[in-house]
Length: 457
Ligand code: F0G
Image (tube, rainbow, N blue to C red; front, top):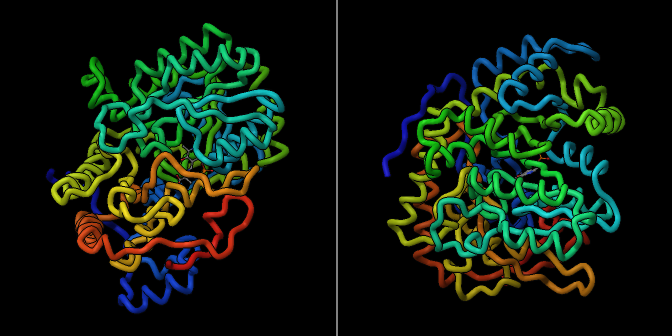
């Protein structure tokens, strides 16, 4: 596949450097083989996440200068409301400092002890905020999502039949919320179709359950719908986004992804005034006054501008083109990944690359470490290492996948960087049988992957 040329030119640069192999081996050992312990300056290409690592445009940087820092009723707040209402068609919009803040504010109102929330797949923090209220989180993704080699256009979809079964099994009154994550990050940035959103919304309506859209990567999802779903080729991204959001009752959004800013989040409520009153109350307690929601005025200004830049079709075509370019180089080399490639990165199938490393020796983490040693590339494990232990027995759990995620920051890296990524993976594949697994030498009780220490076996 040909690389889609950037629809921008570069006006400001940030120097990065590649350490020598000896230095990299020393740094990763000092970091106890944990990617989160590495210093940013010791990384050449940083693919740890696409969240908050995006490059702002000249218009956004100009927005930094004109952001209104009034405590209450600032101009940038109203600009953000107008822009968000225009795109999503929701009556109520509340800024917060990031996605998990939106989850904390909203979920605490909607659920608690004895309740359940069902999603096509919860992101870690979203699951955590469901469980912090005392409720339980249940994943309900379509089966093909669990088979990296099976190519399907909408592998992020909700399993609608199973959803209805779960609702009847637990009782509709016990289901506090259905959460539709677009794109489905944990399944590899895989999209959800409009048809699936419509059917899920219909099931929710039938049982009187509300649907929340976890909208971090809504624009990338809309782009996939335009390219893959029948009847949408001639619609604009904005029209598709409007239709997607019409199926939800509310949304939580980390604006650090598709809205192309470094910090920010949103809550949207379609028309429930009472619910929004509660959202405002909790925002004031946890985030700050409602007209800034834990952000600076300049952040609100950049967020408003980013909302429109994120749904620009030529930008989305370039962005998706980067993923497809890297994926096609991996296809040529016979390297398996969650296919077809998702919206925000490549999820390499580390189980396939290292069949000799069992899940309890963490193949996804082993590949992440090799990528750093090979080319100074920082990625992360999305597999058993991240999943952790059974809270009751303390035993290591086995994840459905062993992925190493190359999450691509927006508007940051060039074609040559993508070639460095592909070349590194190819080099590792050639010596794959010599790569060894890891064991954990220290771990905290929860969310261990951020802090644990490891040792090669
Ligand atoms: N929902 C989804 C689908 C996410 O991917 C994330 C964050 C959040 C919610 C939480 O948002 O970080 O702004 O508080 N995902 C990042 C990642 C961290 O690396 O995938 P946040």
